[in-house]
Image 1 (cartoon, rainbow over the protein chains, first blue to last red):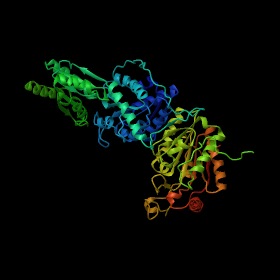
Image 2: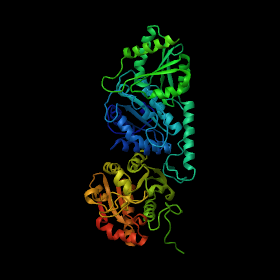
Image 3: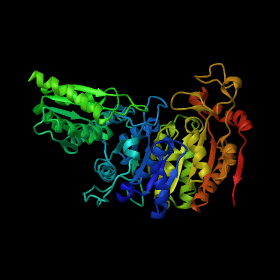
Length: 344
Length: 245
């Protein structure tokens, strides 16, 4: 719905649980809006159809789940190289291999650190509610057009399948650049070419420095995070996406017990909100990272806070029955908080 | 004085990087001629593939999108669906179309995408240095079939034009060669006809062109051109395999 509100009229996808609600919805809605829906022959076909539609300057998207995202990496790399906008929704599942369909955050590395070849980066947005799925999808299309880049929305089966109240916020009014690069048929003007092959002396190095500079601007301007009760916290719990909802409840329970605990939630995983996290962590002196995996985002947390705070980790690999309860996280918070108090 | 022969308008006035005796130059010319005939140069979006054909944008004076290896029909699908009034074609080699891109070509054809696909079959991977392709003839030696293609291990060469002709979405499928003046003239007619299907919005059109690759065949241009007639055409018959009215 967020995509339709953002003006997206072209969708290309392939069925995979737990994201099939998206193609089912769009196969119904897009034809009514004079858009195009194609159920592709594969995830590879779908991402390349997105590449083609995007090269024409249209707002287009695809969606999938972890194993399908593995297949899309080739196309994402080509889109990053050719600087094509496009939105990829990843309602991730558990792995490796066929794994399972449970809530999982085991693809943080895959999504945030690239996945495909060539050392590119793409913005990764991690909503934790139905409302944010809607709002951040609209934001993703703007980011894609602003920076001429693929953008990924990373959720999991909890975020992708939950029912919540939704306010249909208006599409953000953002000034976006003209797509003077898009192919359209020459029409008597200069030839336009969308490509990622650069063989001339120095060409590819220059192109990579150009991409690098773009990533630096994203780091300066596009970080989003949410902080809850971090101002006076002695312990900051850090988590993204679905686990942040459980952590939020656990932090509230800890506050009721008199512990000064806060929650830091990165909404953008790339660019990672390093500065804001370093400040919150520096004030508290200790960060507890919680993830639905055995430790991935924790690496970015350590890089962000450096020596300013102690970093500990609690996570469980995904699978049926492995989702931690608020009580379980509260117990982990107690243990970490007690250690902090003893050291004080 | 009357000019009776000139460079098609859709081709740029530049030298190509193709090897001596390579047929890509002739095939480029035929594609440009078909574009000129139907007057679609200014609204054409070409989709380049991976291989010797990637430099489409360097030789054709049209807008071009570069596709990943084998994915040109999927990219062209996205382009055509987004821009139905534009003229869209892919230009792919045999490794690209008949090996890594098999799924993409079969399904774009079967959906009946209103695009034209030019398929250059030279029985080898050209740009990577002459490895065995799905179209390599049985017994043909390549850099990865040093003892010759073995039917029991490597399978039989794929006849794409006939295979695609079976699919419901395909409006036109043909195979031509450019090894003799007679065949070039026939190829020109077929190329014009195939592009005409799209110009009239009639659906998916496919032209397979048998082509020489002297460098990777280890032959001089004349030997390579002769091989097309002597070895390729007997296995890959020329003709129109499907022509919907």
